[in-house]
Image (cartoon, rainbow, N blue to C red; front, side, top):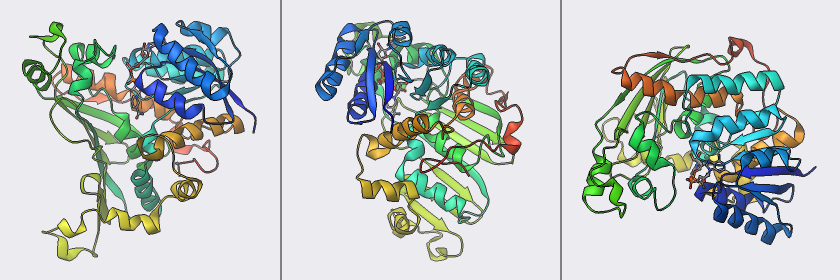
Length: 408
Ligand SMILES: NC(=O)c1ccc[n+]([C@@H]2O[C@H](COP(=O)([O-])OP(=O)(O)OC[C@H]3O[C@@H](n4cnc5c(N)ncnc54)[C@H](O)[C@@H]3O)[C@@H](O)[C@H]2O)c1
């Protein structure tokens, strides 16, 4: 297979982590690396040189990445603020985009992604690794086989205690601090919404039509600073705008509902809370439990013996992607799903096939953030979610081919 020539923008924690995976791939050449910080750019270049024996082009200006070397793809691993600007500029130049996750800052920005794709034909794929999670895919496989009956409701969350990462944002040069000081919204919807959208066939026979978002007060970070757990003196007495828990309820065209929870500034253990409720079964990630109608009647009031029975279901319902992957050898970060999402993008580029997470998915998942911000500001008012497919969702035939396809 022909090698893909890639440029990378953004070499913070995530960028360096993914770069270390990319340099192990024989069919990927990293020809340019870029970060606003010179030391991070150099660290990235050193990694490429060590692995590939060729030093890539180094720059602190992303425009050079688009212009200096001929690249087939741009990996955008930088902070959220510049995601869409960079993606649009790359697509205008015919460079295909692999975009790290994060919410958008305006509805217009999401339309810009779609408009640019439709004008140029250059694809963008959100690299939503959780769409390739082992259990998310097992449940998707079961839904497709009809085991859940009709799916009626899904829920999930980004439930991750980020107090240390946020409050050490100045020392670590991390973008989240600024966002938490200045915005209040569902700022990270896609880890849970991505897999849910695939379960509900969003943008393929179904669309999300409106949402409401409600925010709690913001006390977690203030308490953390008060307890002396950060060394940044600027944060003493600081007011954080971001509420501790943001709950977003989405209504879909075909009648289903989705609940998203952003929960990142109070003590807790990590969970994406992936939950699928159908007329025949339920799954919930928090205790990795499947409950099938008619089968587990004895456990209606005492479900503990069923906890972690998801593992048993893997034997029969593990998604074909994961069966193949286990044989090949699971690798890379986040339990292996980072590798899968990178390969899904790279192989779609090589084969010239449709992206498994395409521009309509990317725009409709990212738009939750600015819409939730407006809803919260206006006292939880309903906000219409644009149909980025402009009605095409009713009858689409374009879809990804091969192993990595996760659409029906
Ligand atoms: N999918 C996952 O599991 C996962 C995990 C962690 C982070 N992420 C995503 O990865 C992205 C980066 O997160 P991070 O934790 O590495 O953040 P970070 O703050 O550690 O790194 C971001 C880097 O981007 C650079 N940058 C920002 N704007 C730039 C520009 N215009 N040109 C060049 N460089 C620029 C910054 O200098 C910084 O080094 C975010 O979108 C985040 O949501 C995804």
